[in-house]
Image (cartoon, rainbow, N blue to C red):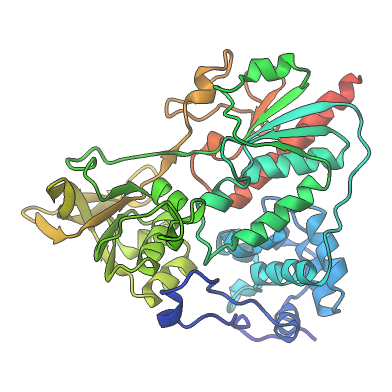
Amino acid sequence: MPNMSLKKVKMPEQDPNLRNKNFSEVALGYSVEEAKEEASRCLNCKQRFCVDGCPVNVPIPEFIQAVLSEDFKKAYDIITSENSLPAICGRVCPQENQCEGKCIRTKKGESVAIGRLERFVADYMMADTTSNSQLLPKNNRKVAVVGAGPAGLTCAGELAKKGYSVTLFEALHEVGGVLMYGIPEFRLPKDLVAKEIEKIVQMGVTIQKNVIVGKSITIDELMAEGFEAVFIGSGAGLPNFMNIPGENLNGVYSANEFLTRSNLMKAYAYPNSPTPIHIGQKVAVIGGGNVAMDAARTAKRLGADEVYIIYRRSEAELPARLEEIHHAKEEGIIFKLLCNPIGIYGNDGWVEKMECIEMELGEPDASGRRKPVVKPNSSHFVAVDTVIIAIGQSPNPLIRTTTPGLDVTNWGGIVVCEDTMSTTKENVYAGGDVVTGAATVILAMGAGKKAAQAIHQKLASHGN
């Protein structure tokens, strides 16, 4: 009989007052017993709503039943038949809006903890065995993938499974994209990301780092070198700013720069690392998404006494995952809601204070959220010495400005056919944040997977 408990099995976590001073992972994972107990809550529905909610269509009930039977190898094989990065997805996917949000158990109580179980299976297999990836037979067809983030890695892995010789071009000196430079260590350990990437390399994918497509080489030049198709998964790494006075002061960062310095350049290890981050005692993070939560929680770990989330709407409209908001509050992050910055002011070139205005919620805007409007006579100053701006990112214009025939939107995203991820340029495909703007890891992976399938269908139909 299924376990009809209305609540998920709680996952062990570090104490908030300890973890906000270290970069070790917050959530500690299920034990075998805890995983089996949670798996027993699955009703193994015939109509699999949870699978419909998964962007990469993992056979969720099947893998959970394998967990219940303690056949963790089978569970892992089921997951990885559709998802090449399970240890990552189990940690950072917004399951509450996807698979878990569709779970029938939410009709009365909490959903099955699908993400936690996926993480358990991936971690168990990673600890218990060496990689089971293997070099696959090649079909002598070449495909280039631009960008080694979630979309590019997924596309490359799916094509390698089908026998293509895939070369992945990465602009930075480390592979992984946002998985490496954007998501903090305490949410996604980098050695784990490296192990997931190694599985894809072992399939035969070639990776060339420090290659800036659009500058080092163009899309047209890649095609001229014999690549029959190109997938663009270069992400959205160009930070947005508010265009308010004082954004050029010392002590003002984009969240992109701040997290890249902390993660990829290991500024958290300064002075043993050569890349410091100036962190004052009072830090303001502008924005309310997951990136804002990551930046705020990182600043706290780097020694700030007070860290504020400044967001112009109310808590109900915060776009960050509920889990991340909960963890931030536990760690002492202060939320200043219905508040919007209008200026940053300094002394001797460094941030000293920020001027804000209070907001009220009016009628819903195009997104369906109530639009914030200025509350009259509400201007006030907040003493801060570091400001981190986390209000979104856009695709870098380099590829679109060096690739004739590639249509883009008015905000710079590449235009694609949603069914195939094909662009307006022949044999060029795109997916992930470079198409949608900053979104989730799993949606980028879904786009990479869809593009790989479309590339294979087209190239296979044309023969050699």
